[in-house]
Amino acid sequence: MSSLAAIFGNSPEKSQESEKLLDLYWNRAALKKKFAGMRKEQFRLQDKIKQQEGVIGRLQQKLDHLEDLLVDPDLAHNVIVFYQLRGLALRCQRKLTNFAEQLKQQREQKRYDRLLVSWNEERTREERGLEGQISEIRATVQQLEDQLQAEHNRLDSMSGFLKIFKRRSVTAMLSDVAEQIAVAQLEEAKLQRRVDEIHNREPPDNEGLDIPTKRSINLMIIAFAQDLFLTFSDVELAAMAKEASDKGVGAINYGTRDECDQLLAKIYKRIEMMEQASDFAESLQQRSKLLGEHAEFRNDTDVVPVAGTVATLYNIGNNGLVKESETNILGENWWGISKVLSR
Image 1 (cartoon, rainbow, N blue to C red):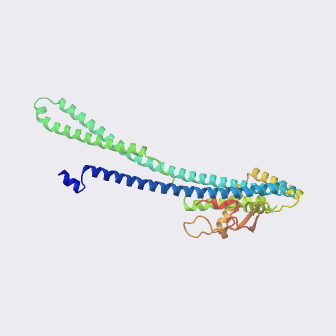
Image 2 (image 1 turned 135 degrees about the horizontal axis):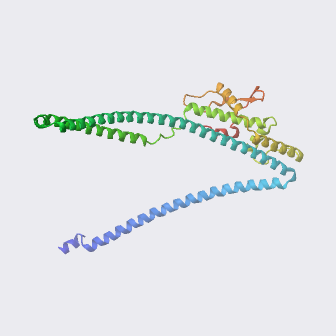
Image 3 (image 1 turned 120 degrees about the vertical axis):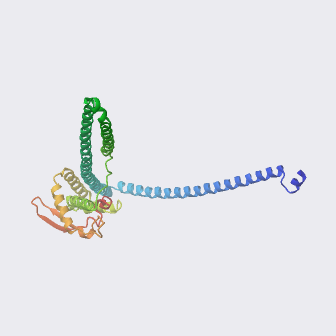
């Protein structure tokens, strides 16, 4: 038998060699696959290094350009003005972002508080309804217990032949009353469990803002962005700040050193005015209402108005007089407004 096995290649030695060859083959295949994956990762990392080198190269060019500007005494003051204007734009952007976030949080909290009040009122109504049923059951149980005690006393007061004659009917009545008491107590326990479940019920999640509220928030954000624009528009600082945000350093000439110093003084003065301003809630509400009277939306679910329908700038004076002009705050993305609107 062993010779036949050797002839047909089924000997234990042959089997072991075949298994070793198969193991080597699969190990080699796994290594090749792993090596291919490592080469692919190597190429990816090399591409990433090249991209980073490109970014670093561009940054170095900007740094060299900035150094050249700062070294030149005729251009250095222009660089200072440029970055002060860009800083002004960033300051306005931060104020708009903070205003938008606070407004959203206030509206969400107000809406959620109303939801909790309604939820608590409904929960209280359910609890009181069940507690009323429990009170009725307890009153019934008390009556049945009084009846049970009275029947016991009546049975005990009987004597002789009458007690023997009435015992069976009274006992049946006592059993029936006791059963009614047990059923009522079970129902009371069931109702009490429902009361406990309602009392321990988890409050609802915050569902977020609805479409009308989001639209109202966005109109207020646009109104605030207009207010920021008006703070600087009469000395053209708003347009200059936006230009500095859109262009690179050195691309704009702000004039001589004296002219740059005068411009810096205007920037600092208006920033101080902006930071000290506090009593503008009423004008914001009025401006938001005026914007809402003309705002149009693309469909019933859209919460951001069509830019062209809110392009009128409303300058509300201290005497309540409203002056209108055209400045598309939303369409031109002043102060990065598109990023802070409620969606």
